[in-house]
Image (cartoon, rainbow over all chains, first blue to last red; front, side, top):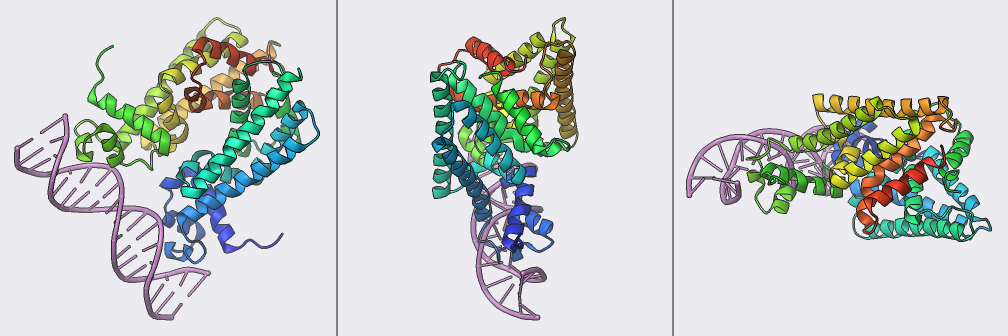
Length: 189
Length: 189
DNA sequence: GTCTATAGTAGGATAGAC
DNA sequence: GTCTATCCTACTATAGAC
């Protein structure tokens, strides 16, 4: 593991604070205090508060986009693809559950190009998800419930994992994947 | 319908703004502009920004608490109780989806007694939910998956309804209830 | 019930010394 | 790389006129 840069430390500390109070309620003075320095010193490492937010969110969104693209082009059936999506969410949640709070709740505070870029990625992600479910229904792998309800109910659970997983001390990742696949898919498959 | 008081109008307008940007990012000037008056005028109807937030959240939380209590004491089996909980969430979402954004994302900005009161209600709600699931598993009505995963996946979907339902123009409430019960329960029951 | 004016505080960010 | 000092702006809330 390469040593964490000061900038990465700041972003990690900010992720935790943003998770607790939301981007708008966290001040640069709060963040500086968490780092044990003064607010002015932060600006030797980052350009603005906004840069911290966009780094957190865009990095994560690109991770999901890249993961979804690999799943989409893979030679699997719809059920297996859904299983891989569940796996993707669990992996990202384990790696950076704090950052996911910002992605879920503070994306609207992104500015200009980053806001548009994020919204495009999120829309494409949902569209890929929807296409997989539709294909699965056509192929009779998935029960023909309302597509929107399936997409929504599954995604809402996966998107909220970041709130729940850190509180579960004793659930192993592989067991979580297995059980989550059961609970989310057994009803619809 | 009795006419809406000025205070109620303010709270309704605030709910919409809080949903869009979050409590901390909405200023009294924003809210005043949405009402077509000046910020100072708001204070003839409300005592503080904080009072607006706590009214939105506590009213909704009490609604859920009261609904859950009726379900708990009812003479139904676990499956029927879960169906009634799904119904409760859909009914509240239809009535006040904007306010639910604050309940979900801005509860941590409540102060003192209200914060404690809210957290107690939320904890009791989850505990009631968990007890119903546990009873259902004992009675062999519900599959014996991990209880926490069932509670989390179901609640996360119900709690996120406020984001999704307003975008679905053509889904009838009764159809939504039926399909949501299918998708959420068929997998576990 | 709404306004103007303003008090008092706190925010993001920069300049320049060490 | 961090500090002190500070700029400028924006926030919540109040006072008092109409």
